[in-house]
Each structure stands twice: as C-alpha cells, then as structure tokens.
Amino acid sequence: MNKRDFNKLLKRIVTRNKVDVSKIKTLTNKERSDMVHHIVRYRGPIVKELIPEDFDNSWLNCMAYMYYTKSKKTGLNFRHTSEHTIK
Image 1 (cartoon, rainbow, N blue to C red):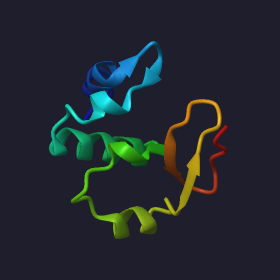
Image 2: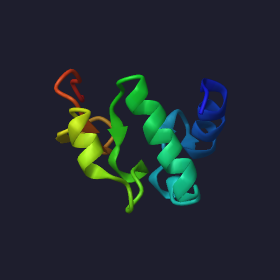
Image 3: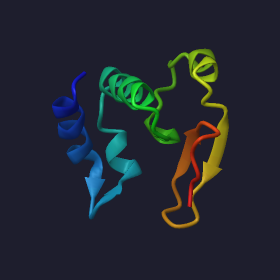
Image 4: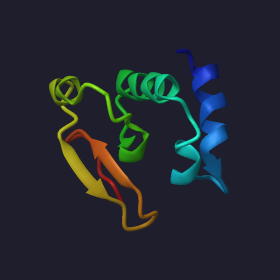
C-alpha cells in the first residue's frame, strides 16, 4: 500500500479531523490489515479498533507494539511502541 491509497482509506474513516470508530467497521479486513501494515512501516501509533480480529498480534509484539493507551483528548484506544506519547 502506498501513501496515496492509505490517505484515500483514511479519508473514508475520518469525520471532522478525527477517526470515527463506527466508520472503521465499514472497511474490509484486507483494507484494515493493509492500513495497519502501512502504519507499522512508518512507526506510528495504531487505533486499536483498526486492527482486524484475525490479525497476527504476535507480529505486532515483535515490532514492539506492546503498549495500550486510551487518549484522554479523543477517547480512542491506541496500540503503540514506547516511542510514542498518547495525549
């Protein structure tokens, strides 16, 4: 997945510059999986609801995505590395 495809999918799930969890459910598991791989490639935090149910969580652990944090600002749940600070 390239940045253009990622941004097209991201526009589908964003409302008023915030990720809308209800719109994430409209994506297919393949699209969600591709988005997660793209985010991991560029070392960003992942919205927990974006991760498909059948996704390989052990791979995420190997990539150092071991931390779960709920954002006080947006209320979203994130899975991230120790590099990230969720506000």
